[in-house]
Image (cartoon, rainbow, N blue to C red):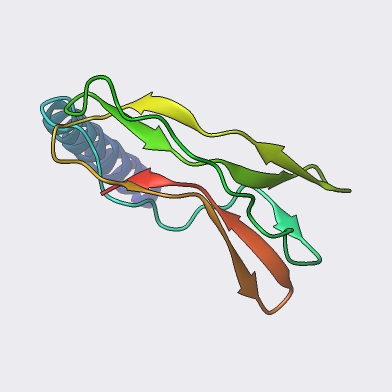
Length: 117
């Protein structure tokens, strides 16, 4: 009897969660997400990256739709490699790019990917 009650409650709960997921997923398609992620990181490094070289980005040929993403240091597990800057699509005319960066943490340096604000 208890197993039968638990199964019916479990099914109801799963259906409610599925409906909630479907209703929320419809909201996301309406607008583009331009908030920063919850600090996901791609890499950790045992030491600080080299100094950032001077890189002059071109003037955007289409400012409302394109923005300059400055270059940054990537880490492949053994050494840092420079990734050159590039023009990227802007999600909205007022969006501002927050650059990729390295932050010092207790166990080393953590790479924080860039994001739109």
